[in-house]
Length: 303
Image (spheres, rainbow, N blue to C red):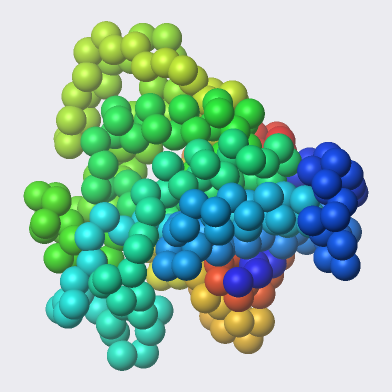
C-alpha cells in the first residue's frame, strides 16, 4: 500500500541509477516526481506474499527506482489465533493479520532490502521496543543503519498485544516507561565511546558498542500511536510521529489531539522536542497505511 509521508530534506533522485542501468525493468512505470514538502512511502514487504525473497528484492528495487521515499516494515514475534488484548485499529478488536501469516524479522528483511537499493529510506513501522534487550537492539539498529549507508529510520512503539509480551516474559505494565528508558540508553550507546547507564529496568557499566549509526545518537527515532499518551511520547523524546491507517478525514482527530498535547506538554518537554511541535511548518498528511510528521529542526534535517 502506498503511504503519503511528510518529510523534508530527503535525498533527491529524479532518475535513480537502478532505473537508468536497467530501463527495461521499468518500462511504462512512472517515476514519482515528488515535491520537497510531500514524500510517498511504501509498506509492502516482509509479510505474507511480501515475505518471499524474490518478491522482497523485487519490491525494494522497484520502490527505490520509481522514487518512493521510504520503505516500511512492522514487527511481531508471535501471534495468536485469539487474544483478549484489543487491537485498537480494527473495529472488532482482533488483529487483522492471521496468526499463520509469514512475518519476517524487520531487521533481517530491511537488511535484504538495503542490499538491493541505494536511495530509499528504510524504516521499522514499527519496532516493539520493550520486547527487546536494549543492548542487542542498539546493535541491530546501528548495523542496519551502517549497511544502508545511513538510510534507516527507527519507528518504534510500546506494543498492544499483552499475550505476546507475556510469551516473551516481559511485563505489560509500564511498557511505556521501559521504552523511554531503552531509547535513552540506546542513544547513549550510539553516541558514546564508553557508556555507563543506571536505570530502573537495567544498568550497564563501562560498555562499548560498535559500530555506531552513521549519525550517531542523531539517528531518527519516530514513536507511533494516536492516543494522547502516544503523541506526548513523540513530543517528549521523538524525532517525528508515525500514524497508522488514517484517512484524510480520520487524521483530523489526531491533528486536533496533537495540538492539545503540544499545549499541555510545551512547558515541560525538552527544548529540542518543543522546537518540533511549536515551530514546524509540516502538516499531518493523509496516510493510507502509516505516516510520519517529522519535526523541522537541524537535528533531523538530514532525513
